[in-house]
Image (cartoon, rainbow, N blue to C red; front, side):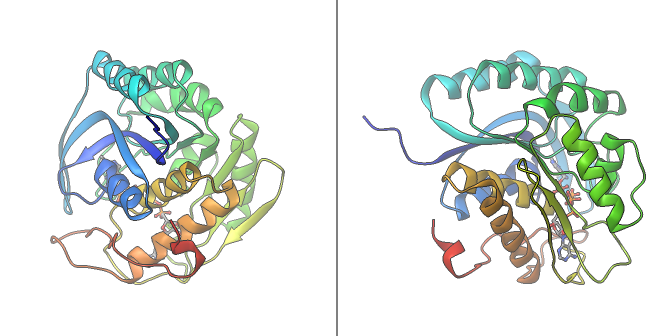
Length: 273
Ligand SMILES: Nc1ncnc2c1ncn2[C@@H]1O[C@H](COP(=O)(O)OP(=O)(O)O)[C@@H](O)[C@H]1O
Ligand SMILES: Cc1ncc(COP(=O)(O)OP(=O)(O)O)c(N)n1
């Protein structure tokens, strides 16, 4: 029996509001034509107004979810999202060392838009020292990049410096997302690839509050494209186009930072799945 339909994995937290975390990852992977699977690391009570509560899963259950997938499916690419604390980061690291789930994209989720901590402060060093060396790609937003690299980012030149610092920590490819430059008219991201090639992904900033789950969506899209066999550069470029479309062609859900429109079409060759 063949088992060759592209399968991808998200190792992350749930969002009861459906906008971020595993929900955003699943919607994105589904839209990009990939069979999505999950390892739940934490459950959050969350909506567009913020995170009301969170509970991390026992490490044994993280191990068992990974073992279940490895015993049956053929995961071609995976991503990490909310990892909660050092115990869960270490559990995820051990499983990524034990099983081959394809190239690992690390979205180093730290703080939700509403301000809730999704990664404890004492877990940041564990992510940097244990998880990053296993990653094919890391996709920090500006505050996350500052924490990981230990420097402030005030200009686009600083994004380049941070990208190089992160690559020096053992990650092959780096995507520094510029969505948090509040004053800029643009939402520009910096990419540094394994072979030294680097480039900017440029986009006009779309004036909206409905950006809940943007980081999950771009990293899930990249993971889906990698699972389909696209190159890292192609996957990152498609991720940027897809997340921009999901913001631009927006929907209104909830009363706070609303979710994205994961049905958005991006047209052209990139719509091939
Ligand atoms: N208002 C916006 N208009 C267009 N693109 C945006 C906007 N906000 C974020 N983006 C893009 O969405 C992606 C993720 O955004 P960012 O806010 O940087 O990360 P995170 O969601 O992890 O905090 C990046 O490609 C960023 O440039
Ligand atoms: C469970 C869970 N995981 C991740 C996030 C953060 O998602 P992100 O894409 O960074 O979007 P914002 O929350 O910052 O809007 C989350 N909120 N919940």
